[in-house]
Image (cartoon, rainbow, N blue to C red; front, side):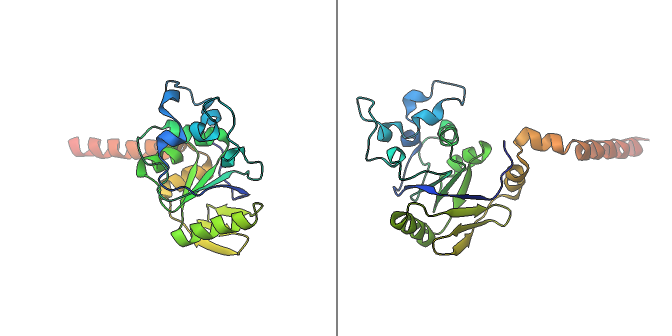
Length: 203
């Protein structure tokens, strides 16, 4: 994983509630075991028609919108627990998803795959959608260190929560294994101390 730095970006708005993982990545694409190529099929059935032609009405096919941040409606990532949904979002190039609510399993899958899920209030989410509708070049800034998301169109910010362990992993660019390896010396010192205690108790 790359180290997470403060990201300021235009956004792709998806003001649809209850987007489930089958809409994010349809089940017929789950046969692959590699993460490569999943971004090509993100929102496949919304992006393309039955003849595999791009749907001009879908936001990912609208050149007006782009960026590293996807702003989605309430209850994003519901449905089955497929990790492929997070692969598809990351593969497309999104580093952050902002919503007022995420399904727990999707939220964890996203963080495990380098995508930061940011939960904001429904009022702040509506404000972001409104700003982007008025000006597609609106910049949203996500500062993970200070746990803030800022709508630069209004200069309003909100704090967001994140597990302290996952926050450190994002800031350091660690996955779970990298994190353990970084703590190797501390773990070894602890094990040595426990061995010394055990020896003392048995002698």
